[in-house]
Image (cartoon, rainbow, N blue to C red; front, side):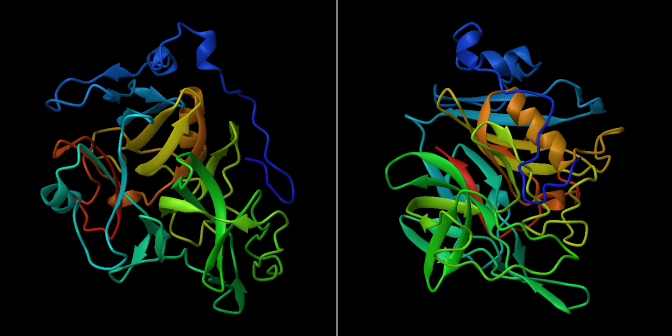
Length: 316
């Protein structure tokens, strides 16, 4: 993987326009070896569940995606920024069709952005310590949101004096380098007020405008973060496609199924790009990774059971 520095990373694969295939909204998904699942009970006609091929990026894989038509589904953000809930707890409360674990948390509180019904209940954590506390960084971290105009998008965001700003590119921080200034209305360049109806924070941004960016360095999700960006792990992500679909992604790891180690962030980005995703955000992974359909688990959680998390996202 090349270092981003002040430039966007470039990769050797390209996004393929689904309109150039057979015209089906799921054509790229099927073309890339995903198979439709029918074992999760009755689903709305606008939501489908697929299981991956046994190999992804030349690795043994167990992965699932939930695919929903944007113009028909209801996207929800679950949780109230504090308090623990398993995915099953969330399901028993609201009975949403699909539930996927959400952003990062610590000590029972979210450290990732949470926006519900136009109100930001929690911003992304505003700083990160490195070098044994000697350096403090102010990263612009990723967020996925349904905007107030009805569109879905991924942005790098930062809370400035109570208002959330979105930027066209992240602040180019990197662990070990001198920290950049705290983000503001004018830094990084091009910032605008972020106007979301429902949104979830996480990171890093994996895909932006049909380009793999994987900005884990800039967002300080490096090797010291615990995210393990270049290691094989269970992963969760949320994305949209160029044909108007919302994608929830989850993959198993840590040998819960023999030989299945998990995927790196780069692997996940490539998998999502291959199925036509134009915007994608990584969510909390590892033992937190869990997607349930009608209350039924897809992957085997790597803790051996569902981890209690603070936030989740849902489709209904």
